[in-house]
Length: 69
Image (cartoon, rainbow, N blue to C red; front, side, top):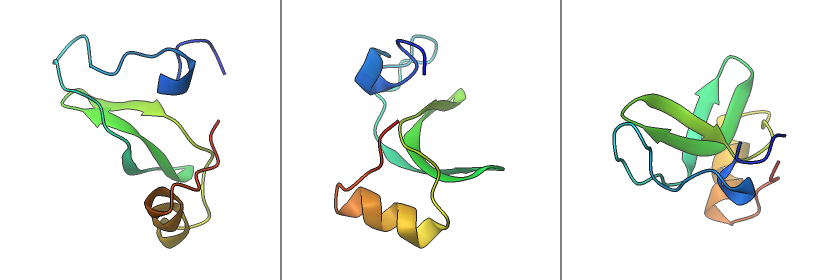
């Protein structure tokens, strides 16, 4: 992981292009479900490892038991 790639490593809390304040949420890509941020421009950061399924990722976010990157 590069410095500034995640919020924990220094990425801004606000998208510099569209101005949206970024909040952690459950997202999905072709690689799987993950905890990350998204703005009007699209996916912004992936803060966690990938989870096997949506329920597992949702439970981790709800219980704040996230496998951070």
